[in-house]
Length: 101
Image 1 (cartoon, helix red, strand yellow):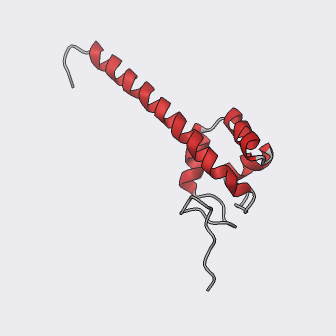
Image 2 (cartoon, rainbow, N blue to C red):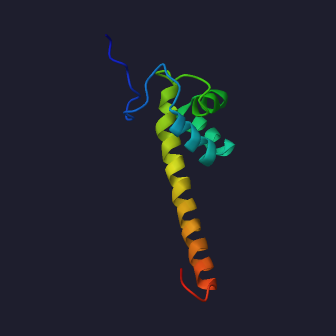
């Protein structure tokens, strides 16, 4: 049986398959159209292709799979900002209470 070819630099994603449902959900939540446009520019893969691959509508190919690493990096940056905002909100709400929870 032939070994499946994984996306370079990403051990869990396989050329010829759609991206995993976990990755698709993260991209859906944290990548905007502008982020996808920047990924398209950086990788020289068309915007429509980037959108379809990251939404799990098109399978990964040798060409379009190069969008995944920039997409993951964008999502990590967005999550870091989101975590900082959540922590600040948590601290603000906690400081409003007379009793600590």
